[in-house]
Length: 113
Length: 114
Image (cartoon, rainbow over all chains, first blue to last red; front, side, top):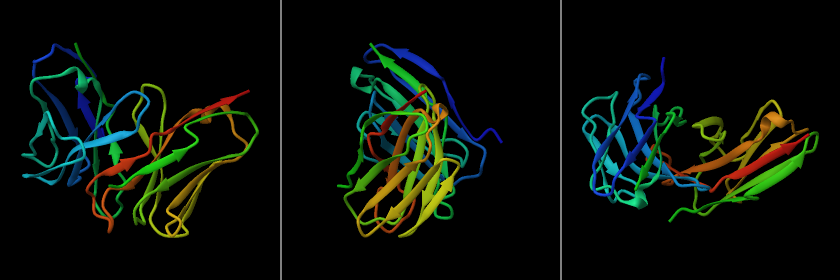
């Protein structure tokens, strides 16, 4: 099992550009999440999904979009990148309720200049 | 709004010493998680605490949960340098469980010096 994988590992964007952060898990987990981590801070939830075709907003969804067409994949789309979106993005997945533990990918470090 | 507060946020300690990291949260929840993060790395799950009074131990780390006090502790016994990392506690975002995402504390940056 590769677990949760994310691509790319690093990316530099110019203001106004768009990009998609990819996330794939091979654990057959129904629940998937996107978090961002700003320097010296904890993680904040951007979006989450409880299964294919179902997504919902988290704490900080503005400027992002997601889709969930398969159980395995949960891409995060940034439209019109802004410097405030400079952060490290982590994707996570879990089985849900039993156990509820979330497993995290390696992260994507994004800089918007 | 759920708030999760950790203290201390920074801790420098010597090898061999004991110390405790505290995690307070603001709303009813019986599910609390501890993660470890090394610099530039992802989060590694340490403990999942699912009920009042839960206590889990792994090596020199022990975590406990008091849901009535809305408090969890992470105790380090006889610290060694390899435990240097940032430790996060996190709580389920909505009471009643479910898998709607976690609210994280700001993390405790732990440095253990020889």
